[in-house]
Length: 255
Image (cartoon, rainbow, N blue to C red; front, side):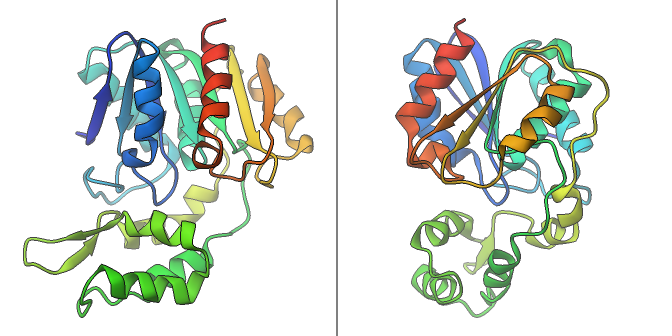
């Protein structure tokens, strides 16, 4: 699996994993912050997202294995691993299976538990865009806005729209496979063993993805976990409060 990626800076490696329907570009600002602080920020597109290959299998085991091969191919055998939302589950699965490759783990606004379905409106909106007859990005934006009524989510999704070789439009993500694999995306992280890696779990105060009742289950899997909440941030903590998030992470990994 040759993952598309960008690297910012030089120094100790920090790997940042994006969430569902996202891509590495969502984390470029944070990547540059780490580069300015003296780290090498590595931002991959996960399989079936961004410009990474489309496949026929999508679950946390294969995603974690992709990261292992990607890091080994780049001669990186130990790094800080940061993951947001679905990427946070990938990071937790990776730490569980390849603990020796993780120096510090940062999980942003997600717990290792199974989640109930919650993306049906987004999936319905994406499917409502008829790519074969689409005249341009403005038309796609209008369709998505009519379905979602959330400009931030619409702009996030529009980053996936690209021109194909024939001059038409296509989604960068492998939408049909992601829909087919949706139960796997909601699934819990499979614990191989207790993970002794120092871990930071950050949530947004305006998000309901991680509740106080999740802390004990997290500690069962990650006994050295510490918890922090960023006030005024929703699920997309890195977009709502980038400076506050960066400061908390950099303080943690420098301890």
